[in-house]
Length: 213
Image (cartoon, rainbow, N blue to C red):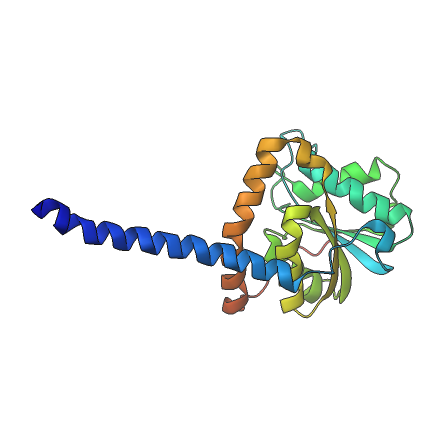
């Protein structure tokens, strides 16, 4: 009984702390969604904007965009073909010739008839915060539409709003057919909201990278 009494209280404290932590993460997720409500729209209701920002994701070893990234690019391509945007900003990790997200994104769109002059390529968009901050500070963009998977958009738009960007979001749901990766991505977004708070409170500058048109 002595052992139970001795360990019962610490275990209860840890359990309560974990429960509070999970609760805080869930509440933060609800707050992020609330402050971006009304800004996630369909192509049919999107106002004309100067730029669509496509957030990077995995490319395969041969440089071909993954299913999730290809879906994002297809949404951006649709917006461009509808005349809803004038330029396409491709932002991702393009620092290495051995792994180049933006190079794969660029090649994909060029292969579908998009003219080179339409594309802006940011190889230093290493995460969502960097991509949004560099869109503002490096590419002098004030108004844009962000394209990613639907579950990712609330966090991306919350970052844009905090940075003073007039941002809308159009999401992809086609990759939902990849059930397990979609579920994993949705769960990761809850934890990533904590990083959102840290990034914004730290006021860190955009990471350095080549400014390529």
